[in-house]
Length: 131
Image (cartoon, rainbow, N blue to C red; front, top):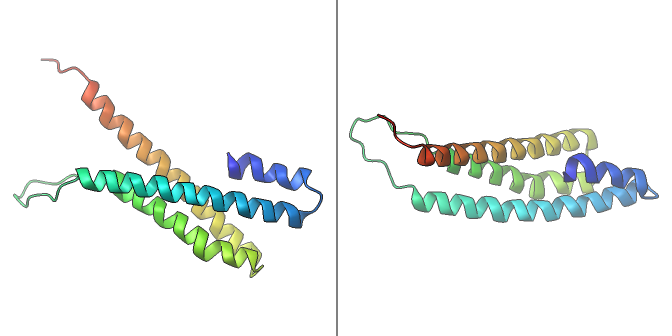
């Protein structure tokens, strides 16, 4: 909701675009730190549960949850420490805004995919066995 609703409202209601941009930067930074904490915790929990597969010739399942959580974590870190400083420094704003938006969108896709995987696993656990 931050990128889709709150930030555009800042640019409408604050007196100058510079003030709105500064506030948006603070909000995105706060959201990034929350994303880092959540994705990091999810990654640690799933990796702790996930054991190394035995190489017995059987096809192994891809551990999607840790992969997606790691990708979301990587996007959040890149957005905070690579993209944001360049936007604040006003370097090629159009390029860095697009890259930042793409990383933000990719984080959303990763989180939706993680929730889908977790809900799917839960549905499989709760499905009664029928003969």
